[in-house]
Length: 211
Picture 1 (cartoon, rainbow, N blue to C red):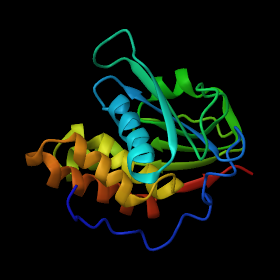
Picture 2: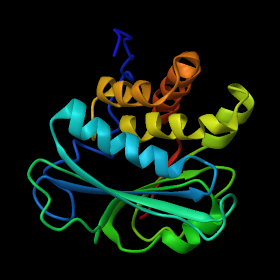
Picture 3: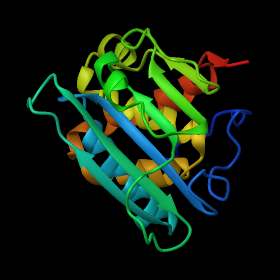
Picture 4: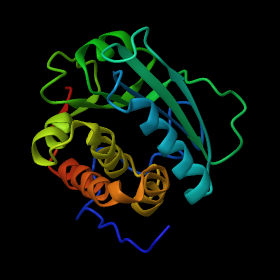
């Protein structure tokens, strides 16, 4: 996969210790849900995370995508379960980490959240979040892709970087290897920049724990 080195953020986010071993679904099991609009690369992002866990981290993982009725613009989601042991029940029941890149996808899919679930929402596109005892991170993911990197399609790589930085669910190298295997050679450098930007931005991501 090449020898690209992905820098680690300076410190691990204190609100999220190593996830495996303390997910709500049981010892060694961690459930994530990615949601957004059709065309934002949400389903691909879930596939890449599952591949990173299986192929590059030695974990077990399953992913369950759900497509909206519209090809572009409709709400869509994918659930990803990562575990240290074989996954006997492949459906997410208590979401430990929830990503939302659109308000309508948040409204539709912010269900089955664990009591101590952590949320990452787009700071501009998801203004209304129910703060029900959860730690909420706000990051302008789509703006970073669209304005800084000049390509909104890169939102999923930015988001993956942020998710990996906040959760530690897979190593940075494992995630990058999975991204690299999925993108054309000519797009690898810009995707690497997007992924690294997500890693860096997560360290400064505003956090609002609920009292």
